Image (cartoon, rainbow, N blue to C red; front, side, top):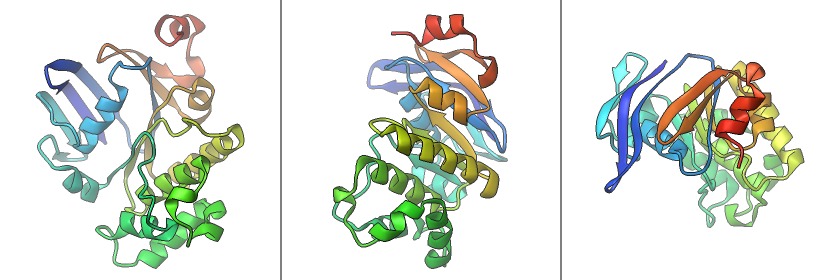
Length: 231
């Protein structure tokens, strides 16, 4: 579904991703792990098209999207939930959701009903401004806004960051439903190892802009965690 081949991505003169290759299969739940600063967020931004490639290719389905703008990749079916959520605080929850669907569906109400079925806790807050919602509600809104585009693949950057444990559990259950009921492939950058093992089928670990380990999450070894993830 998603084929990344030998990509390099820079921030100015700093090389962040250096010769990384990764395949994501349709229907998969993949988690990308690694310490801070290893290039995880940069990888997601390069997939959605926010950051350009210096080298390599990104193929989505049958289409090479390496030179496509972010909006074109979104229309093809790639959705992105950024770290920090980045909802629009002065718009209502409902307006934030609508914004995620305008370019993708002619029937906002139908798609919004599907999204709100996943997030029942948001229904009573539709007219509240996004900026006054709790962190957990904002995170659910950010995921819901991305799902308004009816994506084929959903990229999430640190969805549990700053979220209470009970909301983390709720987000875990929601993402499982997204994958099974909406048939959306899920790729998550995450620091919360417990959440990662619960939500994902497969993991990759990044270090210095490259993938250094991978496998099934239920087979992740303690020595691997200590070597690449322990602080």
